[in-house]
Amino acid sequence: MSTYMAKAGEVERKWYVIDATGKTLGRLAVQVADLLRGKNKPTFTPHVDCGDFVIVTNADKIVLTGKKLEQKYYYHHTGYIGHMKSVRYDNLMANRPEMALELAVKGMIPANTIGRKAMTRLHVYKGAEHKHAAQQPIVLE
Image 1 (cartoon, one colour):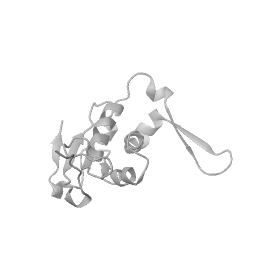
Image 2 (tube, rainbow, N blue to C red; image 1 turned 45 degrees about the vertical axis):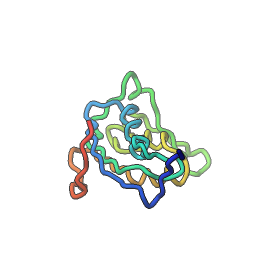
Image 3 (cartoon, helix red, strand yellow; image 1 turned 135 degrees about the vertical axis):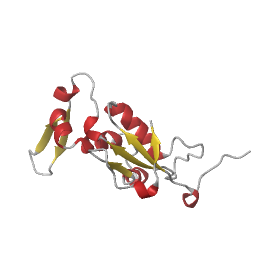
């Protein structure tokens, strides 16, 4: 018996909606990263992009446990000498909660072409409304 290897043309992609209300940032990011990579499917193949589309709503209601809101920082460099910028997570969650989830998921997927393609299938919204009703997404708990 041979091992099944999925082919790029055979992959069927589904749409999923996840409500982030009251969920922890890291645990939600793991669930989203698994769906984006396709690790929940029995036909998962590491070298083929077989993930699904994921819509996350209510990103502004994600919870960070402990003192992470005051102690955790997001760092980025502008490209100029001495221009390392830092943003505390309480400011990030207040102003751009979508970015906090995207950063957490981005750190959990591979840093290659498959990972970059998977990130294009992630749609995060601050509120409860999204514009993908025509795709008839499946609601995940």
